[in-house]
Length: 249
Image (cartoon, rainbow, N blue to C red; front, top):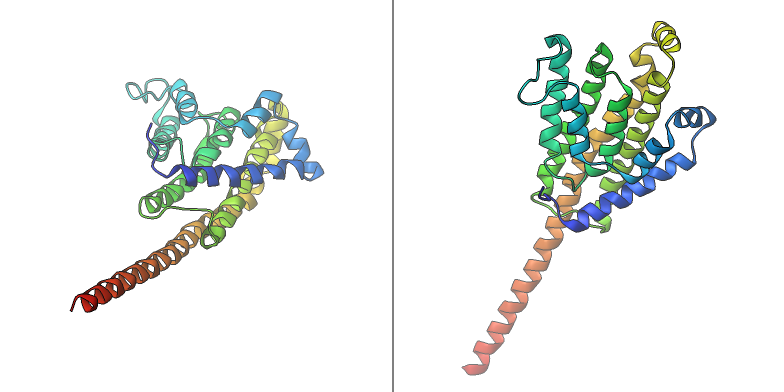
């Protein structure tokens, strides 16, 4: 897989993710209970990361390989899986850049939710919307090179908040799906999907909506600085040429 963004940008995203992971050391007592529902291997996965291939393997294992996407399940359940796989394949065509840190949380959520259920179609909506928005930013990266300069601070702040949202989304998934069958059934009667995920999904949307404008502002600032540098360079070259010509005349 080839990287679409510069290595310096990838390092910046990983730095933002590492800072977001500090959120796990500051969980509320309730969130800590949800975090404790994860196995030790899952906790390490969340901190150490995953790969797009691991996620595609999960989806294909559910019976939606390219050769037999609808062979094992009814179209009602297979269609959301197929749609999510398509969105994910587009975004994960590289393991570098803005999306790489969230592969592990996505894998954990997919492991927890039953992929052949109505619940997954709702999970799919939240994750697909996030991936599509990040794909827009990845296209933006093709024209600008994110850096550690101050002009990109707003972008990294928004991205850090989104990464924390993704962590919270994973913990809520643990709360909802890491229970016994009886508790899960009773919980669905008392707490709807929106009751559990509504707040964090709203927060994710708010921070996603701020990422592209923040990137555009940073890009414009960067372009302005580059234009000024070019103007100074041209002015200096003109001055040098002018002095040279005057000196020979």
